Amino acid sequence: MAIPTSRTNQKAEIRLYNEKCTNCGLCVSVCKDFSLVMENKKTRISDNPLFGCVGCGHCMAICPTGAVEINGRMLSPNQLYDLPAKESAADFSQLLALLQRRRSIREFIDKEVENDLVDKIIDAAQTAPMGVPPSDVNILIIRGRMNIRAFSQDFCDYLNGMKWFVSDWFLAINRPFLGKANSEMFRDFLKPIFNVFTSKMKEGIDMVNYNAPLAMYFYGSPYTDPADPIIAATYAMIAAESLGLGTCMLGTVHPLIQNGNKARKFRQDHRIKYASREGLFVIFGYPAVKYHKGIKRTFASVQTLD
Image 1: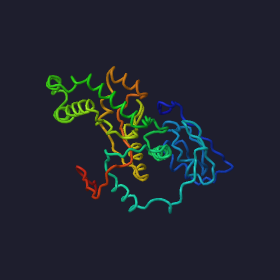
Image 2: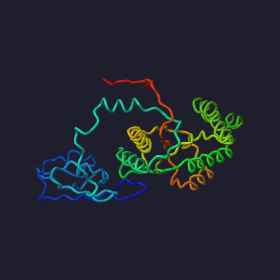
Image 3: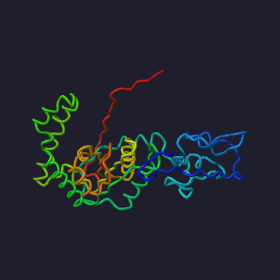
Image 4: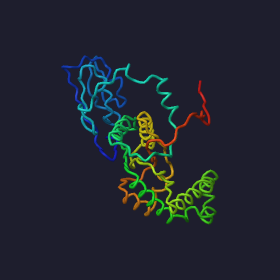
């Protein structure tokens, strides 16, 4: 048995080199699939794992002698790297300063984002944790204002064909099924968004992607943990901030291109491989504005179970 993803439905293969193994038990302690066990003070591969190796790589990464190798599920020993020295990592005050400096930017100067910065953003986003490896996160990268504007125009044309979705008669009929919160969201958010996106686009103003020079759409597959695309997008935003770029997450496009034949065609036209439970657009660019103050945010609640 193996946990399926869109990339593989096979379990990974564990190789244990007894001549290198010191039987320290570290690999056993980090394997939550119980694929490795200690018997008579010897490390061995279990006959009764929970799922079969998912390819998280923990055992291979923690082994001090290289006695464990994992192959399969898009993982091999070639993907191991030495961890950066602790002294080279940002401390809490540096990390907090980076996070506090980030604001949602929707105003960009007329400058493209260099390809090497795009590569660095992807490198950072690929370090994001995931529900089950290998990652089922997909990224659509749209580079250049002309391409992004074309995407926004197509999206507005798509919305023009869906205005019944936020019409008064549709909302009235579906109010009992939508519930209070969703009804209010449709009436007070989606309907105005439909109108402003399409009307402004007719005026030549892109309110979908704010005329950004770079956009990335993070989305999953039918197998993806719903949190995975959001976490990867967040890592990308933080990385971009460290590179001097402004970012803004955009939550409107994703939910409106998931269901129905028109949505399927829109996805196909833009090489979006899957409908996805969760997804997020992020726009990037060099900021045209400079903020001098931050705003302290709060959570709805913070409770501790003692």
